[in-house]
Image (cartoon, rainbow, N blue to C red; front, side):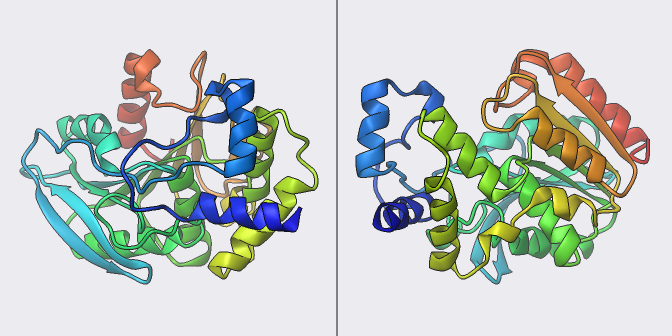
Length: 296
């Protein structure tokens, strides 16, 4: 069991330099496909950027403890500030271009960054939010040398990395807009096992343990709820009411724990996906209202 868990943990946290697509999400797999994944592990090619911004931008490279980060900087004239956008697991900055374009329409410059190991950034390791927190710090420090407040917009893994960056590493943005952060690394592993219709114990625990050992951190401390209790930043929390991977209980716990001013919006019928797909008007209006008065 340990050998199997070690193998799967490596596949989850290390991208391979190969063409092709990532294994579908568990809820999209047939029973036969799920059985194959349990034997072979997931197919995990390094995410790539599928398109470039349609708005004017420059590519910048930022140093991080995890390596060199590739980012797209899209300034606007007389900005109200800058929104730093961070993607989720097995994703890249090009997946956030619609969101970035909306923030530009609101008068904000934007910086979209590939986490280390993803897209155009160096490396091939992903720790599902732990090491990525240092990338968030690197970005906010770079933006801190520019005029105007820094707003963070992050989803899933990026949202967890943001909470850790603020709770433990000293990042101090003016406001957060966080989409569907998971409660803890153990909880997100358990969710995937449930989606595969496999008992969560002990394999989820072993998977998390070996993922931490392989990447030099204690994974059971990767806990967004605990981080939230130390975050004073005004925060708008989004969650999809049909999310198969992040539960209402996890979201409730994170929201309750947030120590600073906070707002929340649930999106009926939305899963672990961009909320503007099904609720564009609501998504836009909540963001615009929050940025007008982030302390709510």
